[in-house]
Image (cartoon, rainbow, N blue to C red; front, side, top):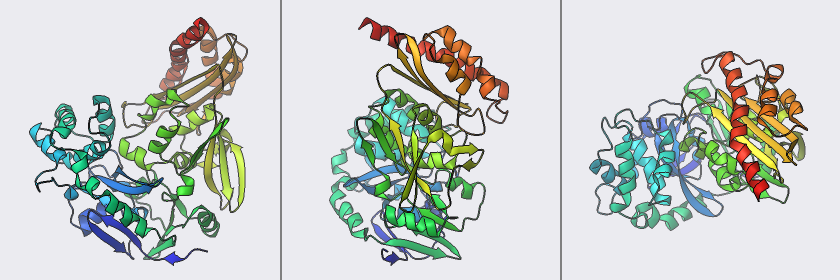
Amino acid sequence: MPSIRKDIRFWLNDELIILDHCSPTETLLDYLRLERRLTGTKEGCAEGDCGACTTLVGRLFQGTLIYESVNACIRFLPSLDGCHVVTIEGLRGTDGGLHPVQQAMVDHHGSQCGFCTPGIVMSLYGLWMTDPEPTRDRIEEVLQGNLCRCTGYAPIIRAAVAISDYGSPASDWLEQERKRNFKRLIDLKDGARVVLESDGRRAILPANLDDFSHVRLDEPDAIIVAGATDVGLWVTKQMRDLQTLIFIGHLEDMKTVICSQTHITIGAGVTYSEAQQAISGYFPHLDAFWRRIAGQQIRNMGTIGGNIANGSPIGDMPPVLIALGADLVLRKSWEQRTIRLEDFFLDYGKQDRWEGDFVEAIRIPIPGPGSLHGVYKISKRRDEDISSVCVAFHLVVSGGKIAKARIAFGGMAATPKRASEAEAALKGQAFSLAALQAAADLLPLDFQPISDMRASADYRMRVAKNLFEQFWHDKRGVLSLEAAE
């Protein structure tokens, strides 16, 4: 058993913070504003949507120090153990004046009321540090998670384009002090299990994956927190009183992506941002879809395994992975069991869980020749919104005929679910518009969607059928091109 440490330690701008008493659900936002009086970080939505609370968090990843934008409003303090938090107050120019990002915002009139400005500055700061000459598309992608009701974004984008006119990342203080900050975080790594208690509530940070398996057995009722993009809202919106939380976002053994000739295995702790970089080469059809999953801050925090384990019928990833034929690796102590991902979802809010087990990894088969993929997300807003309907297609076409079909929907049932009748109707048919339309007409046999705030049942069924036709129009050219070659 590893040693036990009873405090959390992280760097805040240029100060070492050691806390031996804090609630496991105290947010970084509340800590900054209420306890440290660092009020540049704002509270807007308290659910990770508006970006007014954006800060940068530096962490060690694969032997390097990376800084990512995160939502402080749903980032719990214990998850910052071993990290470097940078707030708007930490920015400074080389001459002691405004930072290049700030000066660009001033000169290009990127701020009006100013409430959202600190969060926007921090998002652009994180971008500038990794891409000093970003494209407009990249700027817009990074700003997905920052809402502004005043400027219309055009001045902000102009400022983002011009930042490097005011300085170079190489002269920025974070870059100048990268080696020192890297060593600071290395020095914080002591291999201990962290147990933090406060008023009867506990935060537990296992020392490693094996230690987590033991902690999970001892604490089967504890809440597992990876990115807190869902659990954070349980606290800030539902006001739930959570007693024991096990934090796993720091476990490097759960952040692996292993590629073989037949499968890609993604650790349950891999974030959306990390997964996008790792698997885009295998599944290019997911590139555009990935950018519609929340905002950059949420993609930097949320994990693939957490999205699955949460079991939401409108989660973005389960339909995609089910269509690809993914398996789920579950672990209890030293024992593993592997199940089909679609079999994990039993009913609304109910998954195939054994007491003391947890999601360890996701295994995705690498597609073979003749594979046609498509994924479509329908939501009220294009960016940073929850799906009304999400569908993923995986068809294997050989000799012009459909040899295999896997089609999975989110938002159409109490769980993510395959369109079994439609799949069966497609097998053996020529890949044609008529075949897809006939299969779409069978969707009422597979689904009885509900009406709610996001869409009516009639709308869901209509759009689900229409997406079969959309898939045909998107993919018929692919087969024509392959035939020509």
